[in-house]
Length: 188
Image (cartoon, rainbow, N blue to C red; front, top):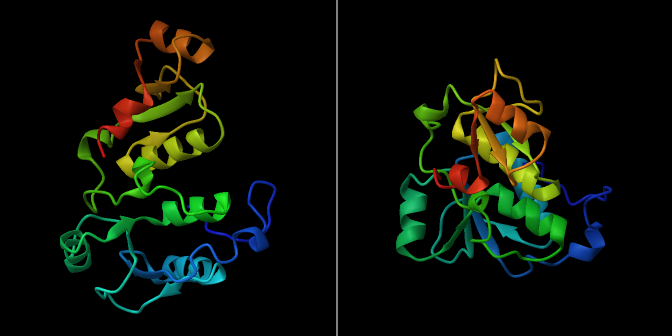
């Protein structure tokens, strides 16, 4: 996810979110060094503290996968465990969002995408804004491919929020599986 506390058309101005992580400490694991640095800068920009290694005194563990010493220790110690998506949404909303609000906020089960999804090509219909963005991210995390358009030769699935519309009708005609977002989220 893109992490930024700078002003954009869709983001809250930094002054509005300044201090939302005041007094909170974070440990970060499982991200490459460049991306980790973006997370650190985002947290620091809103007065959070990032510690260099896991400690029982942290408020949150930020990690990509449900694996490793840090994840297991944080689970045992009942720490809040979130992903960089959670950080992104806190910055964009200007407040601490509920950590169990979205599937994307919880680390993936494995480093390896779901092998069942490697041949899936998924398009979306009826989703807008933040929900659409989140579903695109989930599709990619699953190991499937996302396409904005629906074609009979490429797509295997259509995630649709409703049982109507051009994409829905074409998916039915072309015998493409039509499923809801709950189907995708059920694999995480």
